[in-house]
Image 1: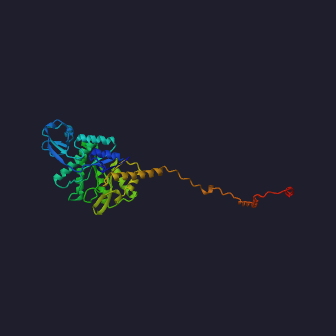
Image 2: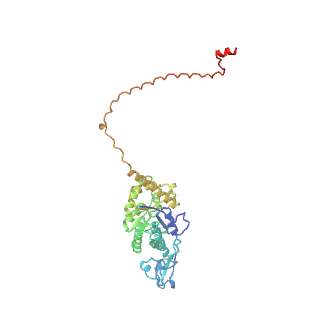
Image 3: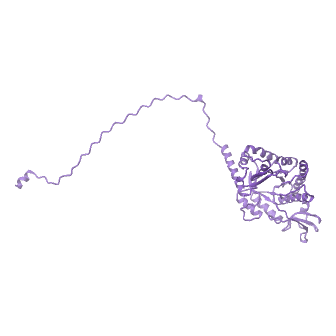
Length: 395
């Protein structure tokens, strides 16, 4: 099954809540949505007296993502702490997020998405830095973990993230350190969500940021439980190619399908190149990368994939991609169910043509006699005829 959806709440949605966006996605005929967890506003405080004895998920108007002792300053979310009642002097870390205010809000959103058959994923904050200061590294790790907590509450199956810039040293050493970081994050997320949420690594279009095609695929092979994201605009900008034909794009799709070992996750939009490492996402019709070759590949096989529109037009381009895919699927169906062509008859089996007699000339029609002129009818004379007898009488 191929699903299409926008990266965020649709632009045409009148309400700006997450549930309004899911309902609008369903009304537009789309079946997927990538929730954007971009701005992070954490607040760490001590538990209040009225909160003691309650589960962290039961707190009203509090989107708690971490619980710990009093000196706990936004540490690693703990599964055991979430399952235990809040104790006195516990430290709670909550988020101020415009799309949900507490865990009950997340549960209602999850129920709505499942009722409307909308596949949810969540994108972690874009800015991460694992090679800066220790505080920056810890903060980047916490943000991805908090994204996993929210994804688990929403019932999302993927927590998508970038991995940031390379370190200042050797690039090979930076990749090795990132591999260790991703291994720890994947293990933590698997334990917290009981395997329901997986970490998805997205490629990058900038050469100074981790995320070339080979780097992402190698990372997926070495770290168990993570998923590669086929972001074609980023790969096109990174490799400076536009994937004009289905033949040039098919090997890339096969590599990601093999590495994913499950449903394929794609991001697509238009893209424009300006220089080495410089690009801009655009609407699909204005970009250098077309969706038609990808639609042909998806229609040729029974893929299980989710296509997310990261275009500035969001749901408009998601519906446009769905239209192109349905056209390609129609061409495939027509080709498979076309009537068989008539078999050519061998020349030896064709009997020689029978000799035909020359056609006799048709007799000329006889000339019709000329029509006789109709006799003229003179009007009778009004003079009275006088008989001989009458003449003598008159004398």
